[in-house]
Amino acid sequence: MATLTAAPAPEEPVGASSRDPELLDAYSQTVTRVAKRVGPATAKVDVRRSPGGPGARGPSIEGSGSGFLFTPDGLIVTNSHVVAGARRIDVTLPGGESQSARVVGDDPHTDIAVLSIGGHGLPFATLGSSRTLEVGSIAIAIGNPYGFAWSVTAGVVSALGRSLRTESGRLVDDVVQTDAALNPGNSGGPLVGSDGRVIGVNTAIFLRSQGICFAIAVDTAQWVASRLLREGRVRRGFLGVGAQTAPIATRLARSLALPGTTGAFVTAVEPGAPAALAGIRDGDIIVELGGRPITGVDDLHRVLTDEADGRSVEVCVLRGVALQRYRVRPISDAALSRAG
Image (cartoon, rainbow, N blue to C red):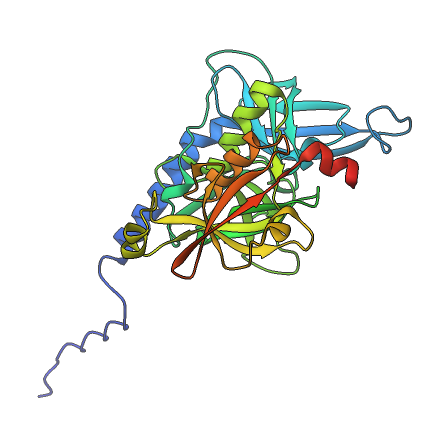
């Protein structure tokens, strides 16, 4: 009599684990939790503008983007290019309520604008910090691509420290790259980390590509927003460098008595710009400007904002293993506009 035996269990695929379903479920729960937390604070921004600008006549051009409330009294962060030249701005929240908004301040150089719709007790998103981001961290985008309101996509932080040229022609440094899918209409919406805190403001996609999208780092957005709320604009000096935050060897930082173990690494110097005239080169790491420590791009932006009067200041750079000091005269943005 033939003996029946059970067929051997199929071998487990390489890399497979009995915990995979648990991990996938945890990932889903994270995305769902973030969407529930930040979704109610995400706004659809509809814009009407005249072809030749706010005062021009003719049929209006309609566009839309995204934004998010960051205070309970109706202040909204969005992209400058979403509301540029707007004749009328209407904001719709997930509950369906729609109302007109006014521009509190606008900074085309960083592609950040702040709107106000008024109100109190509104749902708002909590801002995180882009300084703590790591490549590979979960990144979740919420917005209104092609008018499909409150769509959620998820991916990871693909890279940090990118530079992006805005529509004003200025380079924005320390941009976050992500593969969370973005499309027209996502601009101005929040990029959120796994803890439910905003880590960036979605701003651009790389055309003719898949999975290459960009967001303005939340530290930059928060700093710009605070200036816009205070003055309605950002006054800044111009050095003419592209830069990103970069590490400095701990032993070297200690031997030179540097204020920290990071600085603003110069990735490019524009010919004829103040930095070039002063002697700053590609590859230098700016560690001090105007007597104040520079531990990264954000510090550099803050100091340049305070040094917008065109006076000469000292800049200290790390070149190789030695410090070099130069005198540099930043150009104010107003003078730069007149020159252009």
